[in-house]
Amino acid sequence: MMEHPVRHKLAQLEQDLAQALVDDGFLEFRTPTIITRSALEKMGIGREHPLHEQVFWLDEKRCLRPMLAPNLYYVMRHLKRNAKGPVKLFEIGTCYRKESHGSNHLEEFTMLNLVELDPAGDAREQLRKHISTIMNTIGLDYELVSCSSDVYVETTDVEVNGVEVASGAIGPHKLDPAHGIKAPWAGVGFGLERLLMLKHGEDNVKKVGRSLIYLQGVRLDI
Image 1 (cartoon, rainbow, N blue to C red):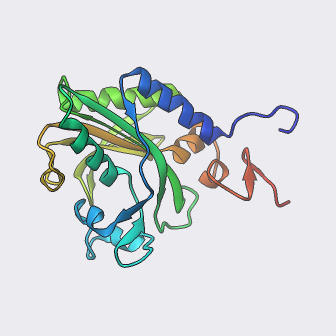
Image 2: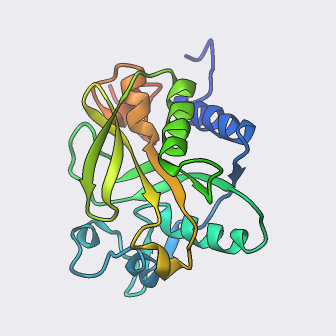
């Protein structure tokens, strides 16, 4: 590794996916990792919601974001006021959840969220198109599976060898009015570490994520 340095696999994947989306007409944005309780409540995640207990709370009103969607909603609402036709946005950023300590889960993980608001064609077809763009860029075969969701009710999940790597949805949706969104949309969120784990045949997602223990999948503390 020292004789032939390369970029961290996660950083390289972020770069490759971002460029593929920019080439497809998407705008990239970066938003804060600290969000408010009210932003989560607009996503239907109140104190009684199952995901509430997985959130890393900083205080009574603020937390580390467990997903990118709240900020995504905010940006597309304000951008749409000044844009004609489809609005295509994406963000790649860190999210945080109190997850189980299995080989497929991380408490600090990287999400790619993309959305096309007011798509030129059928929303479901656009969702499939954008999923194809991501999966073709990384070079993985996949299948689409319809699933239920605590947040979106119904999702189109992306699976590789039976492992979920992404969840997509279309609108109008019951969450939209709270965010001032009226147009149809197609959106999907990918877990990048899980994609890398499957791409490189690793048995533990921690080998490809942010780590003090692993470097390029090799343990340092041996």
